[in-house]
Every structure is written in C-alpha cells, then in structure tokens.
Length: 387
Image (cartoon, rainbow, N blue to C red; front, side, top):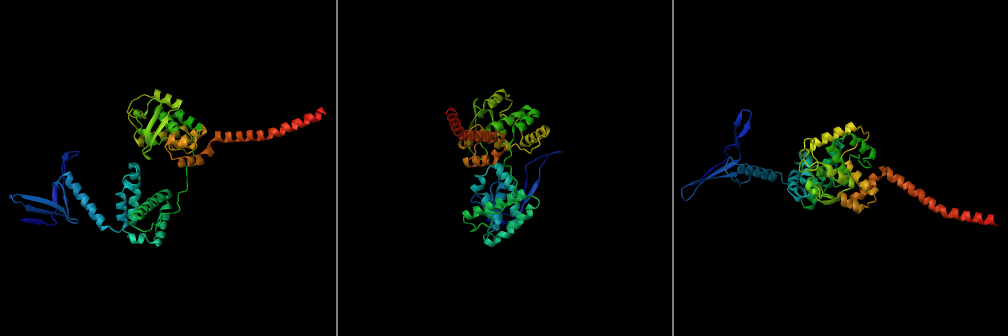
C-alpha cells in the first residue's frame, strides 16, 4: 500500500538555541515536499520524503541537519534548472568549476563573491543567446560607465569578473562569443613608483611599538605579503632562513635572513606559534593589525601615502640595489620573473641611490673617454716643449 501526501508541509523542531532567557527551540515548515508512505512486506510503514520540484529523494529524518542540507541542495538544483540558458545559470556553472573552487584562493573568492552577486543581480535573467551576440557589447559597457561615475575601481572589478565568467563559458562551449573580452578600465590610478624611502622607514620605526617594527622588518627583508607574514609561524624559521608557502600564488619560497633580520628574530620573544603577535601576545587579527598599522603611520606624520603592500615593492628595489638580478629577486619574493621585472621597471625611478649611481657611472664613463685624449694632448705638448 502506498499513500502519497502531495504538498503537505513537513514540520520539524530545530535543535535548541541559546537565548537571553534560556534555551529555545523553533518549529520550521519546509514546503514543496512530497511525503510517501510505503507498507513493507512485514507490515511496517516506511516514510520517504521527496523534493517536489526535482523529484529528489531527501536524505535523513525531518529535523536533522542532513535533511535540511538535502532539502537545500535540491532547492538549488531546482533553481539551476529553472535558470538554464541564462547568465545566472552560467555563473552557477562557473562557481562550481575548478576555475573558481581550486584556482582562486579562499580570500579571493570571498572578495569576488560581492562582484559576482552584483553581476547576477543586473544580468542574471539575460538569455545566453543574447550575450553571445556581438551586438550585446554596448549595454555591458554602458553599465560599466554608470557604475564608474561614483566607483571606477569597483566598476572595473565587476565587469572584469563578468568577463572571466564569459571567457570560461566560451572555453567550455556554453557560449560562442565573449562580448567584453576587452574593455577600457575606468580606474587609471596606480601605485607604480610608490616605495618606502629610508626616511619613511626611520620615521615609522621611531613611533612604532616593537611588535609593529618587527612586522615592518619582516616585510622589508622578505618581500612577502601581509597575510602570509601574519600567519608565519616560528616553525618556518630555522635560525638562518624562512621557508613559507605563499597563500595567493601557492609558491614555496626560501628566504635566507639578512643579518639585521636574523638579529631581530633571535631577539624576538616567542609568545605564540606565530612570529608576529599583538601587544597581548596572541596572533594578530587582520582588522586589528590594519588599525594599529594605520594609527602608527598617522603618528609618524609621513607626508606620502604609503601602504603596507608597498613594502613588497620596496623589498624588490632593495634587492636590486644590492646587485641581485631578476631571477634572484623572483626566487626571494615569489614573483614570476616577468612580474619582478615589471615591478623594477615601475619602481626603480624612485630610488635615489640608483639614480646617483647611474650618474656616477656616467661621469666615470665620460672621464674614461676623455683620458686617452688628455694623454695624447699632454704627450704632444711635451714633445713640442722638448724640441
């Protein structure tokens, strides 16, 4: 005997939660569930639950976390089926792919989720047949221009992420053309040539607390990102070098310590598993570190606008000034050689010592070229005088 109850809401009691007045529990109704009862050969009744829109059998018992997760998964599948052939569907496929789940770091995905949602809200219902039409380009560019009036950098980020979704769609045969494969970015500002000069570092360290000075020391002498340095543990330090796996590039880098960095690390107290710790001795929370760093920078009264990330480019220039070539610099900082060269091309114009060195070499070259002429003239004058 089979009894089917179509559309009857399934009620269950959620696990208790803590409130100000004590423990509470809630009853939640999940709609769109078909309840099917079957009588087995031994006379017992077994109840099964199905998601009505998809026909998916739901796992677990009502009230369990497994049941709720199964219901939500089926709901997402139903929504995906309804959106098939639209930009929303393509975005869902992209976010389920390796291009999103494996090739992007967790931090990048969290940042890009906001851009993805904005694109979906604007273009989600647009059929892919319209998107792949080359004449669909103007509306996307117009949207970009409208966003750029107030927030040019955010506008670039949104359209760039949508362009990557479309590019993925082309590569996987979902659409035949990416209408925004290229576009003119609205945000033209760059941090090229912005580095920490010696006077900046001196002013900052003069007002910084010891734990903040150590953070600057690590950044300047390793060229690593803030996130990687805040997570850096003492186990990565062997007494002469630091070995770490970069969170963004997934590269493993080996950074021998300068004498100054070795001295600083040898003197630093080991109050936590991480090398960098807050004033109370625990690992830094990213937001708190940013607050303390900003407060210290303000107290230093540095006129130029400098960020922590600019220390990474500064480290590249310091290595170049020390005579390191591009492959050597890339090995230390974890950049690709092409990127390291690009940084040098952008940043080196600000380094006073290199400019002075270049002029000194030019003067020396000029003197060397003039020397044979002077000797010849002196010789000629001497011969004339002797006659």
